[in-house]
Image (cartoon, rainbow, N blue to C red; front, side, top):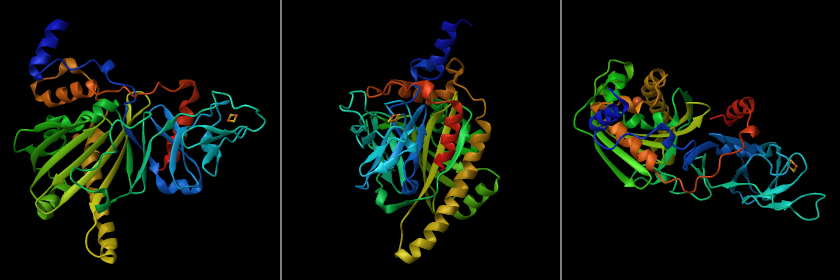
Length: 364
Ligand code: FES
Ligand SMILES: [Fe+2]
């Protein structure tokens, strides 16, 4: 079969226009990224990395969290090794200071601050003790949360992290790869998927499933929570996936934040949520128990993905009719506006070794 014939066959099988070329996906989407735990700012500035971005995050005297490019615009020192002075971060090398918007507010020994003395600033949101940064000058959409839910009514569990051995856009498509739910997760589809776009930057898939596996997790789910589950998966901006699972006796809330990680790998941070309930004293105890169980079950569910995603790559020419929802997701992803996307960082500023050590410092 020629390439053109293959493409036509794929298009027909996948139910629409041809799936895009891999080059259609941005290296680092204009979207939100998990940047670390708020409490780490108590010890001073911290380094956060998402894709090839290295940012210093610090808390100003006014208690505001701010994020700037970590590489000093003077001679390139690492601002995350600097100090917070009032509302600014002071470079550890020559002592230039930059405020939360990246403006240089002081340069010792320099009569006139040069125009290049400016740091790129990233929008930051703090929620549930977690920090999120947007890759762009302005957020193209608000930091998402679960549909019809007020973040104040929820508490977050401790994030857990893993590295997926596949490109970020392949990992983003996982929830729309309907076929893998049966073979990887032991879920039997009870009705065809319903897919829509509740927002210009969000794509949502809803499917009712039957829990059919023999793992200890699935047996406990069937026994105590429910045999069927209505799952809603919403991807925002390509990097944030929000999953709810409505069982007969409980509802799960899972927030999955992803970022490109070196070549063809993806960093994944998973946060489970639980609703606040009852009086405060009771809530404290039951909340920890609930979060612990939710975290355990979510890890059990995602472990199958982590193990079996190894080596999965984007092969649009090999999509079949069973991959239709996934192909449609890729088309949506490739067309997502990126107009506020910033130019890529100077790659010479981030060595492989420093990227690795920086990730370790994130501690999530
Ligand atoms: S390298 Fe930062 S002030 Fe010189
Ligand atoms: Fe999966």
